[in-house]
Length: 296
Image 1 (spheres, rainbow, N blue to C red):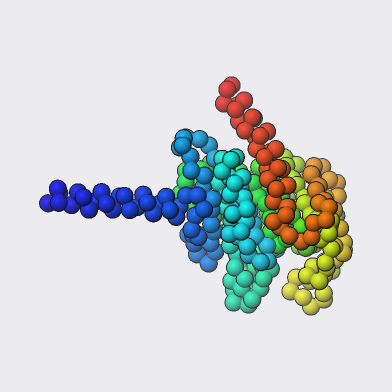
Image 2: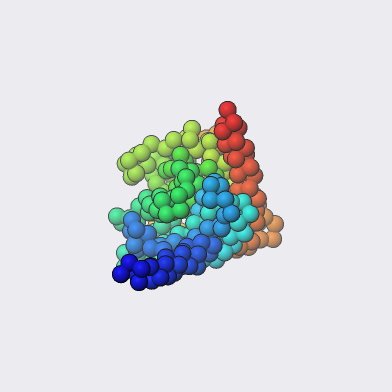
């Protein structure tokens, strides 16, 4: 009886291995988040000849258009040649049935904490692939740039780098104004105090096109879902608002690499090579430091 089952069992093992190779490695399929299946993600997983080789994690956060697979594909070559896993979440429009496009940008939407959803995805990916995900890099463009700089404020201890791309609105490190314009009530809203010392340890890039000048989507108007006093005070255009964020960070002692790209409009694909260069520089220093510690 056992002998008669052996070929079938071997075939089943072979099919499972083939499915893993097809759907779980390289450019993966889309996975529902086990922590909250309303949200999902895709990955790029480098195929390694040495399974013991350490991989670092890079998260690329989509904007309002939800082009999460496009960002995965854009960063795939970087992941392959730099031994990085690329994680691209999907936070859909209207999760609460109200057609809200913007909830994830401000971290909180009703009972949803998008920072915690991302961390659940990160831990899930770490467990699935055997990765050290204590720290990861985070890039976000447009709506993703909203999310990235606010996530950095709340969880600097989880990041080895942050690249903030062309957010339409910014949260300044202003203790005279409430969230989301400022940070005065962060403790009441999130139950934490901002750790400025930890933020100073995270390499930060801010990146925007010099031709990214349209304002129709980023001008807050009274009565709007996210309007509050001071909503437009950081500037009129995305470059102006990102520069206000830069000055706010630098006033708090946080170093910023500010990339203003000539002739670039609001197009996330055009900034990816510059983000990759930034991450590569940080990775080189990070890995050199790890090697020195391992040698001691």
